Image (cartoon, rainbow over all chains, first blue to last red):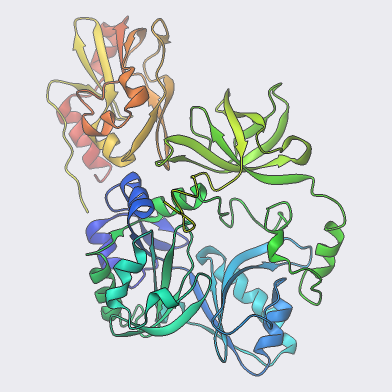
Length: 368
Length: 134
């Protein structure tokens, strides 16, 4: 089993599970407590298991432009953007974050997809003069998320974090260590993700120091809360809600496909399926009662199957079962009533727009 | 992180981590401290209804945390007499008090003479947990 640089803390304080070949904490105290800490204060997550690949070289810019359906050459230096790796059928290989630095790009990819993604990058790079460096094991990555995240991180940050706008990043120091700080996250809340460049599995002490100090101001959170938070925010999980057999349009991610862009892997397939409306759509469902889970059938009120749940959980904030799933387009209207088959019994649900929480009270756009 | 688990001596147990307290033929049922700690935040318990028939080791519903779904198995055969409807609004009682306020149902047991010997004593349940590496 692989370990992140912060493994000792997880063993001492958390309940360990296997995730993508890593020993990771599913919780430290409880998923409920950790989830609510992020929505109300701030929480920290060890996300070192995620793949970090640096792409450089003379052709880095045209290579990235060819790799993804989102315009990247025109992005300013310092931008962090969410995009997709597509296969030639226009299906999704992975969802990733790209940080555009002055001379290269940092790609952050899902842990479970890393090997597959690297192979794809190798294939696409064959006609480009690029260097690719998998720095996953040599670095640490920590997310701090919540309305108080900035406040909790600022004492350790050499840069004024209020200058780092959402979906941008900067290179500075955190706790004295060389760090990239990106204002992105997987919870729907304000927050930052920090890559510590000089501290990885071999030389973990600086990263452990940073984590331990952050843990005095923010609540350590495990993968359980990470999952319940991202579902509540309506964010897809690769392997559950998006996969090689889902396309960005039906997944509700068509905004990633820059209008008018061609010359990228999957562009012909995107043009083809872009010509007809999608047959099914990813939607949010909130239950009256009971908890929907991955794979449960979705039916209309006459028990005719119209879709399937792809991610389900119990929202600690709303105290209700919530889910995402794909529903046949004609039956997918927001506001519509559905039934979810829960181990043979139908349970009432409603199709709603995500995020599931009230955006004036929670999330990075909160006004209250 | 290792836990020590509470295993009251006056209860009987199953390998599916349920407990039962017998008062004559009235059997109160819940899940053990080990099961409650393993699930952690219990957020949903499917309760049977009074009058439902139970069979020893038969499933009667689920108990769920945010991440996990666990089957519930009846320790004895019989008819459900009462259910703990507090769990509908306060499922966390199972975590707070698995042997007390977190009880799930009461059964009028029908076959105790043959079924009681099959249940585990607290010592046998403790040994069983040890054999699982807990």
